[in-house]
Structure formats: C-alpha cells, structure tokens
Figure 1 (cartoon, rainbow, N blue to C red):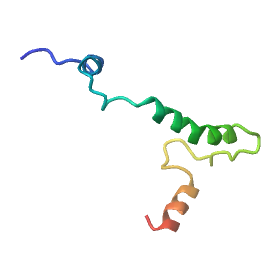
Figure 2 (figure 1 turned 180 degrees about the vertical axis):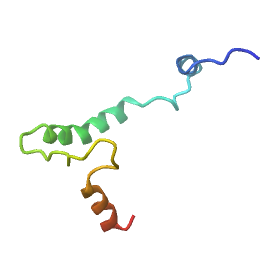
Figure 3 (figure 1 turned 60 degrees about the horizontal axis):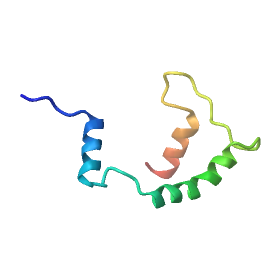
Figure 4 (figure 1 turned 90 degrees about the vertical axis):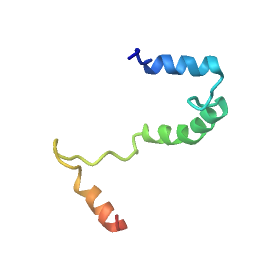
Length: 73
C-alpha cells in the first residue's frame, strides 16, 4: 500500500489542477466581513451582552435549556 497524501498535499494538488471547490473566492470573503464586522464591533463595546456563566463540565447555562425548550427543539 502506498503512502496517502496529507491534507496540505491534497490542497496543493487541487491548486495545481485548478480545482477551486476547496477554496473561498475573494468576493465571498469580502461579503463575510461586510456581514460580520459590524457584529464583531458591537460585541467589543462596553454595552455588549456577556455570556451566561455555568459550571465547568456541565451542559451549559440553564438559560440555554430554557431557550431550547421555549422553541420546541
């Protein structure tokens, strides 16, 4: 059995072959930043909401269960 190529070798091979399905286009990256940059900026303000605290090793804060139960999932 021959050696299997690692992930980077597969990506380099895709580039050489002109296969773009593993890569994001520049306009997609720009659109992502257009959408998420305002959100990230708002999360960095003093008035941004803080995560609910919960004990290590648990499923998360009780508010998460309330949200799930309230939406029917």
